[in-house]
Structures are given as structure tokens and as C-alpha cells.
Image 1: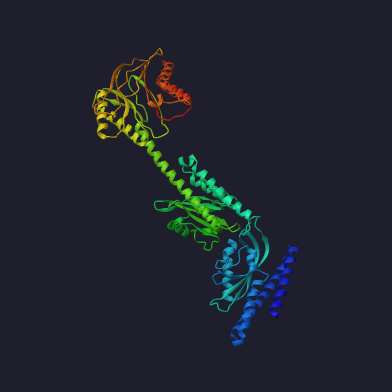
Image 2: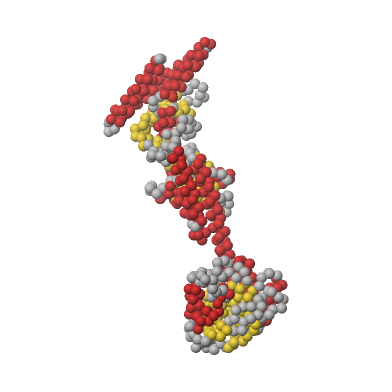
Amino acid sequence: MTDLEHALDALAGRVSSLREARTAYPADLAPTLDAALAELDTAVELLAEAGEELRKASKRAGGKKNGSQRELKLLRQVFRAFPVPVVVLDSGGVVRRINPETSRLLGSPDGYLVGRSFPLLVDVSRRAAFRSHLTSVLQTGQPTAFETRMAHQGRTHVVQLALTRLTMPGEPQQMVAVVALPIEVQMPEPGARPEQSDGALLMTAAKRQDLLTKMAKLLLDEQALLRPVALPRATRLLAAGWADWVIADMVRDGLPRRSVVVGPKDHPVGQLVRQVEAADPAAGPVVMQVLERGTGVVLEMVDDDTLFGLSADGPLLTTMGAGSLVCVPIGTGDGVLTLVRMHDKQPFTLSDLAVMQEVGIQLGLAVRAQSTYQSRSQAADALSASVAPRNLPDVPGYEAAAVYHPGSSVGAEFYDVFPVSGGWGFALGGAAGKGEEAASVSAMVRGGLRVLSVWESDPDLVMRKVNEAMVAQGTGMFVMAIAGFVRGREITLSSAGHHPAVLLQPDGGVRLAAGGGVPLGIAPEAETGVQTLRVAPGETLVLYSEGLISSRNDRGEPYGEERLADVLGRCAGQAPSTVVKAVEADRHAFSAGQVWDEIVVFALRGV
């Protein structure tokens, strides 16, 4: 055995003794730390001696080549078997070599940290100090040591870092050897090891599937369509078990805008959350990259703190304590979802990226569905407003009231009260059919009746001209309607296939008007039923929609005009508002609250 091997073996024994001393006397670490620093000096001398032997061996020729190879192997073996964590950094702090003891300490696979920035393993509050120490060692050649926290793969350590400058053969720049002596070690929770058993892997897969199931239920909830709650709900769900930070940026006017920020619940981060909310997502390279490429990114270790943008206190990721990050698109260009875990948590993996990309797709569909629903809802509201007046005007000599209930789809029933030459007019009806087309045809008929009544003194002439217009338009739909002109106590009615009006008398008697006629839009020549009624004080004229009469109970029986007459008979002498509410309540009880088609009831009472 060579002298170097003997020295290495002795060093390993002394380091083992120091570890035992640290365990036995945790309250008195100063002597142990001093001895550990002395051993670091010994380790540096051994490394320098081994390097010198390697340089000498490289200059030997011919038969000494095999000896040089043996020396090189010995040096590598010394580095790998070194009983303390040793990391070799370049001048920028990037890991170039790492020994197995370091991998064991940090819980990472062999070689995993090579090529990554070492300062990111150091506690955020000490990173600037570490970089200063690194620069000083490179410039002066004087070793230095300081205490800090390191975190990786769910493990947290308080360590004494010793830095020494190295000049290595074949390397164009100087290196720095970093030796880490653990003072306190916090191991990860059970089940948080990088290498998981089959059972743990199954549990992890089940957790991911459970997330997707919960997310789907949450986003398919009716409230997610009615109100813009999909983003806040989704981010809260993710923050509950998947990340310390969840940020959603949505695209508006071609640029990403910060929409939702959820921070750690167990940290006083109110001010920090506001900084993240105020930051411009377009200034974050990772956000723009995901938007432009349409694919997600996972960083198991954040090696560039500026990726998410800057705040007044520096890089956002630094102030957030970011250890790993996953960033995925929301839908197709709708936005970006970013999740951040801190240094003391398990880093995100490619499996997490796959799950979050699926979450991004679901969230994008939900956001678009909500937007489409809102647009269609607004259009439906506009159509509904076009088939019913906001308020009923005062008709001299009468009291008027009405109820209107929309159906299960965009409605086609309409009613209106409007001024005409020498009096007032009213109309009620609906297109045969449902949806936006039927509603638009009903709105056209309502508007036609209102406009033509300005010039015509006879409701029947108005009805016929509207019929001509419908036939000429070729809508392919027909409309049942009834219109009336009020002049004093006389009301002239024109019916085009509509249900007959009902005249409620003060003694409770109920008399049906003639009604009749053929719906508008069927034939060029309209067929209408015309009748003139006299409405005395205390009498009430009631008009109603097809939706009221055709309402059914749980046995499939229709509400019908006979039941309507019975209800009206019990409302004799009541105000119009009381009459329409009584009909509404009776129909509600009859159909157990179900409404399929629009319900319209209009009452006009002589006073």
C-alpha cells in the first residue's frame, strides 16, 4: 500500500471519530469543528500531493506510462472514496466533479448535480455571501470557511463549507474544491426518498390520478360556467398539495397578464405575494417560452433565478425560495400555469410535468367554456330583453301586470304594451320552436306589431301586414300571436292561432274570448279571429302563453285552460298583480317547479 493510501485510510478513521464526537457531545461542537477544519487542511494537502504526483507521472515517458495510469486511477479512487462530501466547482460556481459522499448527503443520484449551479443548493440568505467567498478564494488563493444551510431532494442540512483553490491538469481555468461538513441534518419524511418502492410508486400514480379527477369535477361544476371561478379554484386545489406557489397568467390583448397568485399558507408572505402579483409575466423568460412553444417546462433544480422575472428585491424566484419549477400552457395560447416548490421540498419530475400539462388542458377548456357560456348567456339575455318590456307603462283607466319565466332554453315567447294612435296597444305570442332563431323571429314580430301600430288604427290590419312580412322573409317559422287595441272601455282583439283571452268578471265568472285564426307566416293571406270586448271597471282581461297551458305534472297531464279558469275564478276582485301571481303559484305547484317552455301571464283590469 502506498503512502497516499495509508494517509487516506488514516484520514477516514479520524473523520469517523469526529462524527462520533459530534453525536456524543452535540452541545459542545467547537472543539470538534476546529478538529474538522484541521482535517480539511490535511485533505487539501493530500489532494495537492496526489495532483503533484499525477503531474510528475504525466511527464514520464515510455515504460512509465502504465505507472502514470495507475497514479491517475489512484487519484480518482481517492476522490471517490473520500469520506467527506467534496465538490469541485469552476470559477462560475458550476459543479464539475462530485464525489459519492456528496450525492449520499444530498440524496441525489451520482452525477445528477454535475453541470448545475452550486449556489442554488445554498440557503437564499447566504447565496450572495457564498459567491463573495468563491470570488475571494479564486483571486487570493486563501482558503475560507463559513456556515450555511443546504437543501435538496427534501433534505435540509446545516453545514460548514470549506473552499480551497485548485489548479487541475488539463483544465484551462482554476477550480475550487468545496468540502461540506454536516453540523445538523434533517432527513426527508418517510416515503420521500428519490428511489421509491413499487407501493410508493403506485401511491404516487394514484395521487396524480386523484388530482385529475378532482380537477375535472371542480371545472365541470355549474358555478364554473356561471362565474369566472375556474382559475381561483384550480390554483387553490394545486396549492393544497402540489406546490408552495401557484401562479396563473392569462393572455389578454395578446400579452400575458397575471391573474391569480397563491402563496404558502404557513409563511408571512403577504408583501411577497403582492410583489409577485405586481410583476409583469411578459418579463419572465420561462412564461414567454411556454407561450411561444406551446409546451411545458420542468426544472428539477432552478439554475437561473431570473427565469420568472424581477422584483424590487431582486429575482422573483430567489425571494420566493424556489427550488424547482414546472410551467405549462393553459389551453392553446390561453395562458400559462406555473408551480414552484421551495428548496426543502421534493423537486418536480417529468411525471409531474405530464400531469400538469393535462391540468393545463382541462383548465384551458374550462376557461374557454366559461367565456363561451358567458357570451351566449349575454346574447340570450339580449334576446330575452327583445321579447319582453323592462317595465309596463301606465294605461289610462286600467291596471296592468305580467309575469314572465324563461324556459330551459332561449325563449320564443313575447309580450308588449305600447302606445297607438288614440289609445294603447298590447300583444302576446311566440314562435313555434326554441333557441336563438325562434327568439329572433319572435323579436321581429314584436317589433313589427309595435312599429306598424303607429300608423294603423286596426290591430287586425297590423297583424295581416306582419304576416305578409314574415312570408316575404321566408323564415320557415310560424308565430301564434294575439294583439289588442285599447280605446276607452273597448278592446279590439285580433288572434292569429293563439289561445283565447279570458275575461274575469267581478262575481268570479270566467268568459273566454273567441280567439281562433291561423298562425302568422303560414300563408300569404292571413286568417285571423277578430273580436271587440267591453271591459268594465272591476273586470280583468287575462292573456297567457302556450307554455302555461302545456305545462305538465309528474303524471304527464297538461295544466290546461280548465284549471286556469278555476284559478282565475278564485281571484275575482283582486288586483292584476295578485291575479298573475296566483296563476304563477298554481302552475308552479302543479309542475313541481319545473319549467320547460316560457310562461307568460298578462292581466289588464278596468278601474
